[in-house]
Image (cartoon, rainbow, N blue to C red; front, side):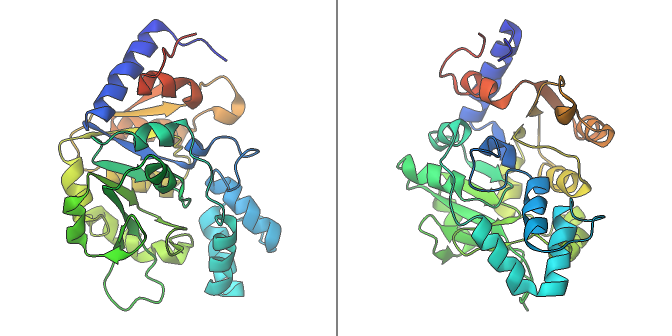
Length: 294
């Protein structure tokens, strides 16, 4: 474990206080789930693509691309096959980790963005005894005849009107959908065709999310931006927010953790300040549980 400098500790403490005070919105990626070895669900788009490819023969040129691999299965094997595979992959909800438990205890956090398909953040909120939250989830328009981009759910999984969010202390926003409560996810290229057409004018972004981001910045945790899809959604969700924005990213000491040129460009263009520190080392400093330095 690398030592964290006193300056970084102080910075993490300050950022954590802004999250606790509702001034920074947590933006979670699959990396908050920890290592692939200890987690019962895939912990990255590439990891999910690998699981799909292990079950269906997918052409080599797309086998590492989650969205294209899913589209291949949808086209060749039918949508229901893809949905069953996704349901099986995320049937087990992982044990909440340090990030989830920290955020679940913050009754002053009005919005949590969670971009992966698992139900871990929802589980953490329930286990923390929270009764003042609900979910807003992006949905696939596959099979929908209405112009609908999201659905709203009470904490018990019952679908409700958008107006119900006004009574919640915390909104859990799942822009790509979720395995729970109804396993409705955006995963294949076709799921995103209309979303990407409309997202620049913000149509698929729920109004309550737009309202809450206006006077706030974002803190990215467990996120990477190596694919255009990941960058597009991050850019559009933080659009018209006040800032500042930060991203906890792995130290650039190993080849597998190095940012791509496009990731570096995205961080600069989006005004996101990178903090190169291992997530498990950063959480104590963010949460104020213990000093982050060692």
